[in-house]
Image 1 (tube, rainbow, N blue to C red):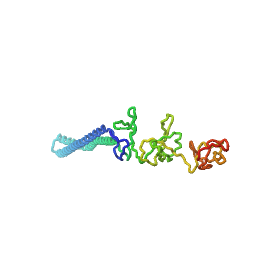
Image 2: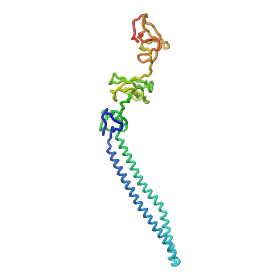
Image 3: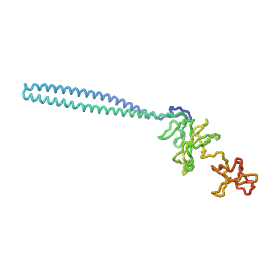
Image 4: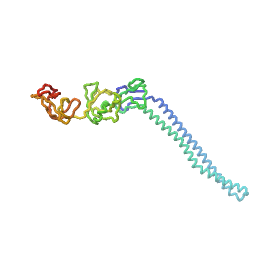
Length: 343
């Protein structure tokens, strides 16, 4: 029913989306009417029970009076005939039994009345619970911003096309359609080939490059590494691991959903010379590596101690100094002129 403008700023607690609540509001009205009706039924039931209780009390009083009268009549047994005496005795016994029966009915009547009233009250309480649920569900259909930030609309399927969520769209259960992003604390959602995933560790430093702004390089660190691979954009047999990097420095030009790449530093060396990987040679797997360094007397073979490497370069811990020139190919003779780039 309503959405904020894509890219617009919102404040914490602001309504940012409202779903169609007509049917829910109608249910609220129905439950309110049900509560009112049951409340009226409770009052009616209480009045009815009060009348029944009072009528029973009157019956007890009448029965007690009849029993007492019958007992007084027994005092005339000496002056009445035998038949009348038997009648008086029988009347006394009947009135006493009737009175005792009514007394026994009092607790049963109280229990019955309490049960009847409790049944109506339970119906009333059930209606109130349903009313509270309906009100709560109706409130949930108005989404509020959990924090200050920027409203970022997600792409959803609309028929045969994809597009940003807009007013009038149908959103299905579990479907995301909008994010509230804090521009002062942003992350990069990325993927890495499953082969390289085991090299990553939480906290590793990285540099993020934005495709929209080639001149910007932002420091970041690995914030989270997924545990389950997902299908990549490449063929289905290629699997990728989700990775999340948190930016350590922000730039005012950065907005959500920009495409980017990141270089993660797996390890580093300080104060080491860097040589092309192709300039390092070995006579065998167990032999020490060496390079050919240009000197005034031609090419000099020199053993080196290697450190970290990548696909193109290697760190030389000892054996070379900054400014040395090394050969990319083994010299054919001591004074060959082939040379590589200066270090």
